[in-house]
Length: 229
Ligand code: DHB
Ligand code: MG
Image 1 (tube, rainbow, N blue to C red):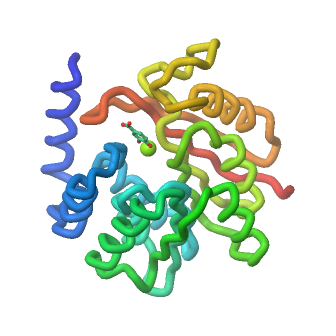
Image 2 (cartoon, protein in one colour):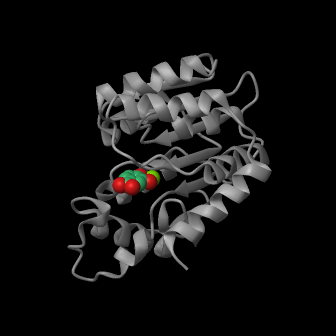
Image 3 (tube, rainbow, N blue to C red):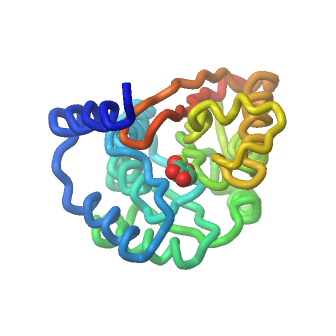
């Protein structure tokens, strides 16, 4: 099986199950026009996020790593009209693209983009008493995944779902030396440490699902907060 084959199956899935959506198409086009790095999730994973938000009955959702706002639109779509999504983005230029796409999708009242290094903006959220969130999606620089998980737990309640993207990366996580560049600088070590934390922290129960598709071979983690701090 080749990546082309996986992409053809993704197309088949999308044709059947994912409605045509001008706002989502426009968000991807805007990211590309602005020269943002590729990295947006595929549509079927976006739909999964929307469904998870709905399954959770979520009213408050946090995203770590907005990029161009594509996944934020999916997450926000799962929320009720009075729901709230806060999405964190380190790069001010990416954040502008995300804001514009969220506005074009008519989701300004639900979704807010906060600019800054997420380890800082997470601390600010905590200090503001912004939590607990019902679902948290971690999809920023992989090097800081351990810190993002720690903050996510601080911003959670029992029952919060935590989803993390790119935790397989075509098997790059198997590189014990931690030098494989496919998860960015320090990314393999960050993701390996993230697995160790998920395994050892008594407050969460987690699994990882490997995926193939238009974006190649990767995987996402799904964790449920089961215990108080
Ligand atoms: C890439 C993909 C991602 O999902 C991400 O979070 C970061 C980078 C990539 O394809 O390079
Ligand atoms: Mg990602």
